[in-house]
Length: 355
Ligand code: SAH
Ligand code: SF4
Image (cartoon, rainbow, N blue to C red; front, side, top):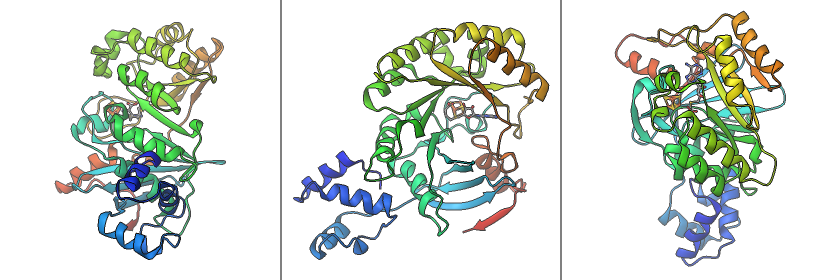
C-alpha cells in the first residue's frame, strides 16, 4: 500500500516481472480500492499466486468514528503497533478535505498543541500515511472522494520525511489518486533543512506554522524556533519559492491566542516580516483542549487583527474552526482517549460507528 510508482516498479523488476505491472497495481489499490490480489483480473493466475506469497496489502484500522453537527468526520486510526492517530474529513461546498497524521504524538511540544502535550510515540510508515487517504475514500459504501489532503493532523511531517514524501508521491500519481500539487498541503513548524529538500523532491503546497512574529515569543510557543529561528525560516521560505518556475504562494498559519500573540503590535510586526514573501495568511482561532490555560480571543479582536493585515494588502483568512464538537484541533481525540482509558470517560461526542 505504501509504495510509490518508482518503488513498485523496482519491486516488480526485483521479482522478475515487467515494470508496467506497477501502474496496474497502483490503480487496483488506490483507484479501485481493491486489496485482494485474487480480484485483480488483469493479473494472470500465476502472478496473483506469486504476489500473494510475497506481499500483503493492509490498510490501517478505523478504531472509532465520530461525527460533528456540521458534518465533519473524525476518525481514530489504530496502527499496527497499537498506537492511535487521528484523521478528519472536512466537507465543504466544492471540496472534501482530509486532514491526516504523519506521526503518533510529536516531539516538538508547541505549547498550544494537544499532540505536543502527548510527547512523541512513533513515525508512521508510508502505508500508514497513504492508508488514511485510502480509508477515507474506500472504507464504506458512501464514497467520500477526497479532493484535498492536508498534513495537519498529528506530528511534524518534515521530521518523518521519507515516508511523507513517498505517500505524497502516491497522492499525486495519475494512476492512483491524481491529486494536483495545489490539493496537497504539507504543514511544518519550520524544519529548515527539510523545507529546502522538499523543493527538490516534490511540488506540493507548503504551509508554515509561524504563530509568532518575534523570536522571544516563538521560542516559547514553538520551541523548535530555538534551533531554526524566524529569519532562518523565512529565508528558507524565500529560497523554497525561488526554486519553482511556476508561481507559488506559501500559506502562513497563525493561531490567535488571547493575550499572547493577538495584539495590533503583533499584527504590525507580522506584516513587516512577511512583506517580501509571496504568501497568504491563515489565521486560526485557538481551539481549547483539556489542560491548557490558553484562550481564544474574542471574535471582535480576531477580526481587527485580520483587518489590519488585509489593509496592508495581505490575503488573510479567519475561519471559525469547523469540527469543534469532535475536538477537531490536532491530537485532542487521542488525548481524550488516553484519559478515557484512565477511567475518566471524557469522550462525550456522538459516536456513530464503533468497530
Ligand atoms: N506539525 C505540523 C503539522 C501538524 S499541526 C505543524 O505544526 O505545522 C498543524 C496545525 O494544527 C498547526 O499549524 C496549528 O495551526 C494547528 N493546531 C495545533 N493545535 C491547535 C489548537 N489548539 N488550536 C488550533 N489549531 C491548532
Ligand atoms: Fe508538533 Fe505541529 Fe503540534 Fe507543534 S503544532 S507540537 S509541530 S504537531
